[in-house]
Image (cartoon, rainbow, N blue to C red; front, side, top):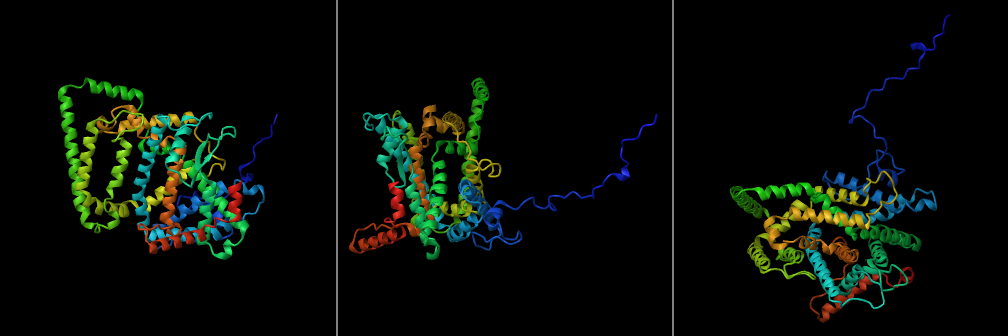
Length: 512
């Protein structure tokens, strides 16, 4: 019995043309970059994108691309999340970029790139803001511990009492109280004020946009709401969360060693003999001497290339010493024992040595910040860090909001960071400044309350706006003469022209 073959002859099978495998150099892109699809949807793919930072350096090309990518991620997260519910029009994002974002960002970023002096001053002002935050926090803790803060008949938690005491000592217009429930008007947490953020965005729009683009109340309201409440509000509130700072610390300091490894190392140290301890001591002393020699040699080589001392940078190390003094609790903290005399004696020695080196530090630190910190590589790292913090899913997987860490998860991150910080502090410094685990935890306590962090973010926001947009800052005279008083009145008048406080839209927002 014959069977018919079910196989098709090879010559009758359809054949596909051979396509050579493309390498990384010859492969065509699967799709256009995100910023081209959202901000330039109708431009040809080969058309160059107008740069946000104008300059002749080739290092600005990747910075402009990363900036455009970050802007596209922000617009997709904070605009496209609600705009498609009303219309399918795709011209909104290109219009926002062409009419609003580029006229504002391009001159600001170009001026900062051409004149980095303002960013240098801002960086040297940060220690002052941080030390003020630390001192205010511990002062608020002392007031709560002594019973000076509290509201009769109101169920207020300890964190809310600390936030109220902090705000009473450092009130800011950029921060407001958000009540958790209507039954308890005295309870709640402090956060960035949406009215302040919208007023700030309105002032920036009025300063940089031409009159023709700024005249429409509808576009003006929509644009400043997106800039103020969606972008600045979301970013600022995220910066105020303690979990944000714990994630940053764990990212750069690393995870702590496991308990088994710590116990094993402790047993090994306890079993070492006297000769091994002596050898280890001499090794550490030799390492310290070698490190001091390297630092002195490096300073002697770097000082001749630094410019002369400027008057505004004199005593520049004092703010860093003040911050370290407040963070380490040299003068004591609320709720903790008084620091021993050895801690103050060692710290006074550090201040004395720093004072002797003040002429060198005043000349060297600004030069190092301008040449080693304010670089193109630092700009790329900051942009990448912002993308990783604001969009942990790389901005491509999903546009849904990322779930924030719970209270228990945040506390666990804090415990891991405390252990890691205790591991990194040298044993000699740890024995003097933070001999107990409670004092190690006290270093990070000022960042453990969202209400207090909101004030810190508000101060940093004001300082950054003053650095990048100095025309929005009202300059106050130090000597109250008639001429200075007239100048200050003129500055206030100019500021009121920039921010129209009688604006009916702002009034409606305030009443709402």
